[in-house]
Length: 310
Image (tube, one colour):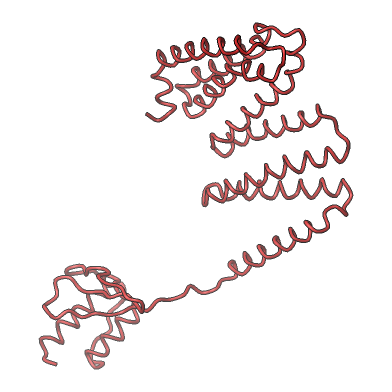
């Protein structure tokens, strides 16, 4: 190998080393190989000079080919083998914890009915609390896991709570009260986590419970204006809160306004489950309300365009 070509390759390897295009020990090995050991040891923190080398240009199953930029026609290639990350104690602990949780869930699934009611309530509460705390812990690092843990937590609270209340012989009003507490917790969690869909779920859930709790009272001596009195003031309150909050916090203002819009049609939705309600009157009221809401949101489109990010 002629001296000019050898000097070119050595300069190229030095360039790779300065720009960290190859691992340090690879560069040292190549330099020792081409200089036959007659090379002064340069510090690793040497100032970067010259042209920067181009990064990956071609890849194969065994490694990555790296070529220098600004080199002569003869270009040297080096292949970096793939490395596997070492197993750490945190990884082992995570795997063991996941295995124990899965084993515990399988054990509980087969023997859950053998436990007493207080023990069942404790199990449901502990799992819901653990998932909620895990969702709170991962909300900044991995949001998808936060959504998963929150969903599991509230699913356990709803299903497990209703199951335990029925086992204890609880009445329907108590179940509705319990679900109302869950909806309030959803609404509070929305502000804690910053997710608008939690507030949607909480407020629409409260509206659904409100309609279910008042359907019998509205059905007694039913009249359309009496049904409207149960829903229209509530809708106006929520929509008004949405418009008032627009300047301070448009993110939550949109939720209140949309929930108020849904509540505005609550009387007609509720009347569908009342036998005394006339379908012709319900249709007429729906047409009138659609026209009124369309006019309202047309003249106030400057607000809800912001809510929809338009």
